[in-house]
Length: 297
Length: 227
Image 1 (cartoon, chains in turn purple, red):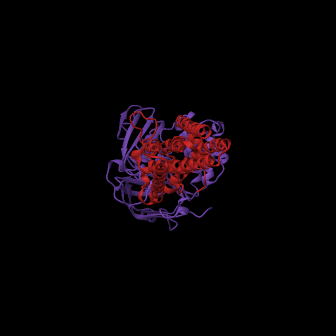
Image 2 (image 1 turned 120 degrees about the horizontal axis):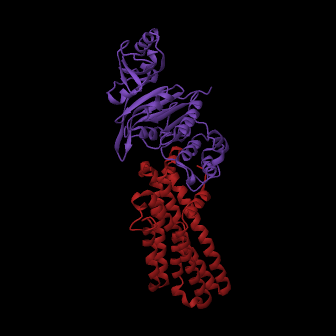
Image 3 (image 1 turned 135 degrees about the horizontal axis):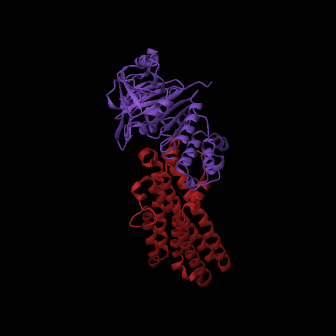
């Protein structure tokens, strides 16, 4: 396994036209994993990615990749791959020509990237003639022309259909075994599906950095589909196809299920109705560092 | 930073051919003028010998205009942002597009030179041939310096990237017109004053574009290149 680099942001403030969007960002990441950067629109996700990628110069603070200052060192920046929300492919070129255009600058083999993203049938089509999903796949391919230490993926699955989104997430999951990936999204379900860590950003500040598995909501709403009425056995409300249980922990939901099954009732489905990350958008959070989260394990 | 001059030049022409066509037409008019003066009038019409410089330099300004359109296009679809993420800085990006613009101007200038040299050689007079070479020298100096100034200033100042009142070309082109247009009237002043003024304008344009290019990475913010 390759040695995984450490990404460190020290008191980083950054923005546009001398207006700060990010305020005193501090964190250090050193584990190969997918770090989902979550936040509402305008929170500063893209600005953070652009600053880490060296596109924007921070107003203050330093960004270090293995101790190398990303802003000052071109060499450090060549260890980072950035996928922006824009496709950034020359529209008048074919997919192959576009990838070759970039490979002449960064190296790598366009054919391998085409194979990785399953673009064989599209390689000779003009980029401007592709559908939105196909364009996104081609744009993602350029990020994987060469192997990098750190990948910054800004909403890579935005506006894509579920099948293409899953394909792209699978590729990202595959490379995340020995790479550090920062993946921005405002889709809570996608975040829990792909991420190991969560970086929550609000109003330009990091409000949480923790393992997603450590994030427990205060209330769980569990939907249960059964063959008969269970409202006399457990405290549940009947809504649509489900009986809804409000519990304070997954264990409590398990006990309720046990009670129902012991009465000989057939349970056909049971699932958590709300995303555990939902509350993070609704309630103010206390700052939690990655170190604390790792110590707690 | 690898050189992709040819790729950028080809991309520009595939994006828009109208301006390049207009450039060719104006340059052809200049070539026709110099050939006519050289072959039929001889050295006695020295007063008007520098008039074709204005046409040929104006052609050189128009011919690479697609490069500045490509810059705006690449900025809007995120290509410039991606180039910055690859470790390029503002000056690297400016240089890449500038080289493509100068390359296209060079292609046209070579065509102009061949036509003028052939006409000069046919005329037979050494004086006329030397005047033709002087015309080419002045055309090169004025043409390349104005192309540089227009390209670099358009990249440096986003307000010059706008296309006003239905115009098909960015506003920056006006800067080039301001430098070249007065030279059309300079023939009335006489050969020597015209030569001095054109040399001065070319020097000024060169100095301004070099200063902008050198200062670009210090004074031009990266966010100006973001979509």
